[in-house]
Image (tube, rainbow, N blue to C red; front, side, top):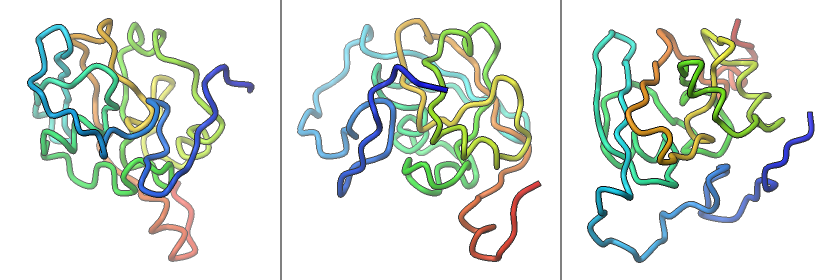
Length: 156
């Protein structure tokens, strides 16, 4: 599959994300206006609903990390596309609005636990205004492909 997205770039200190370069080094620390934020609902593995806000343009991984959400093991590779721990399941109506999956993301999704037709990696999903109020589900289990590779195993 050929993606129309900008090719992913890897630079020292940068995340491997479809949202553009990580804003980890950004000097912008001003207060966000309400129009710059969207509400996201996460359904955790135990069924708990976690509601938070994220900045438009940030990845869902950024939201989990920046808000210190209690989602066990989420984003172990810090967005470098080296694991599938930020695997999320989207409602179909939101899934259809997302940018196409890249080959690199698909490689990691193929190894994810509980893969569905509407699965994506949170590190590759950038928040937009149209996502305001969306609900995403965290799969019941997590497979960290980095650990499986270290042990000579492949997730099933």
